[in-house]
Image (tube, rainbow, N blue to C red; front, top):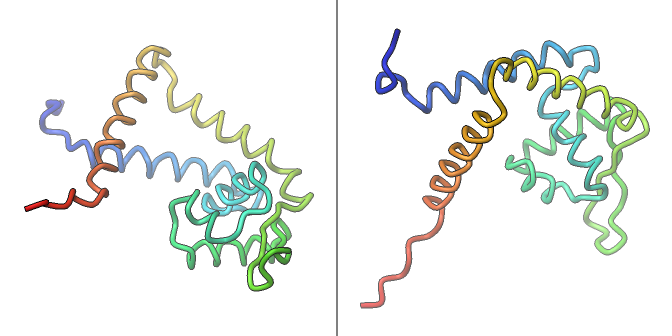
Length: 152
């Protein structure tokens, strides 16, 4: 068995993320939505009327990538674009009734996967794990901040 110091945190986190994605995709295939499409649909369900650039910010994706996701969702009947009444160059995004009909089922899939993934892990352990990962995230976000100006 590998010692803790032999395990790369980044690789372990990446492996867990890949496994979550793989198992989510397997469970959600019946809806015809990719994970990216599901995330966009869920965000629009909770925040109707976002612009594509706003959605990209919430999803932490590039606007061009979100544009492709929205194009596919619109073609599949899950999202509609409506003109922005305040800016004729912009579009607002809304989930369709078809999207609303699958939201609860997709959330059930996500809950079931989380339940399966955390089986045998006490609530206190999970809370501590989440707190540590959040602190790591915050530390990494600080690295994105511009360095303070040198006042010499």
